Image (cartoon, rainbow, N blue to C red; front, side, top):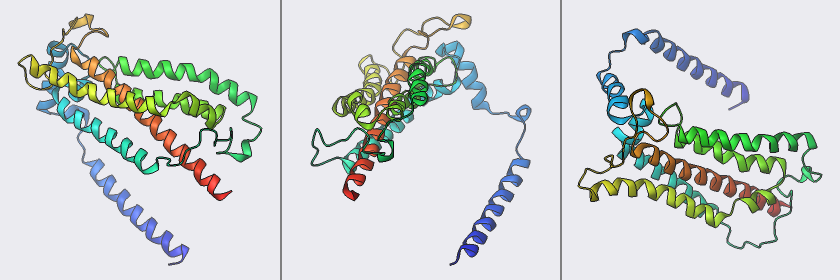
Amino acid sequence: MRHPGRMGIFFTGAAAVAALYALSAIRLPGPEDVRGEYMRIINGECVTFRHVTDAVTAVNFDFRGFDTLGEEFILFVSVMGTLVLLRQTDAKPGAWAPDALSPGRAVGASDALRVWILAMTGPTVLFGIYTVIHGQLTPGGGFQGGVILATAPLLLYLAESFDVFRRITSHRYLEIVEAVGAGAYGVIGLLALFRGREFMANIFHLGKGGNDINLFSGGTIPVINAAVGIEVTAGFVLLLYAFLQEMLERKEAGS
């Protein structure tokens, strides 16, 4: 099929999807019409019985923490599968040239770009940590904060080279860290069984409640949140490592 025909099919389908979306959006109830019983129960339970102020985090890591455990291991298995598929079989320690991924960058990034990225790396790490540890208080958490933290090594690659990225992201240690982060979630759930409680039940002190809720409130929620942040950070850095290495191998094979 020629290009005009393909574009015609695309725009016809896009118009149909847009029309269906508009029809569905028109009939959506406004915020004042929401009468979800589940919403009222969760909002009432969070502060009073869980000592957290972010309902989404409470749902993810407490009310339906078992489901989130499964979601975390979906990410874990996906990362491991990607590494197995892209794993280098005949790696040579000195095989990487400093800018082999981008031959056009033989002279390196500009000084302005390097200064800006290096200046932003620290704030990026701090913001990622903030997002992880404040997950039970404000929107955020281990999943979101982990992705932010994983961008810090990528910034260094953009400012320097793949060789620098490889040196600061030890592949073997990252695999261990990811496994520890994923396993810690399950171990926390098992600890409740050893205490005679149901799986994933809170067994830690809930900390201060009411208007005094802080970083140490929420019992197991902030602990699980931190474990998820560790696993997500390591997992995404491993993916970046694998994909960048794959790009390098393709360039070397084509050269």
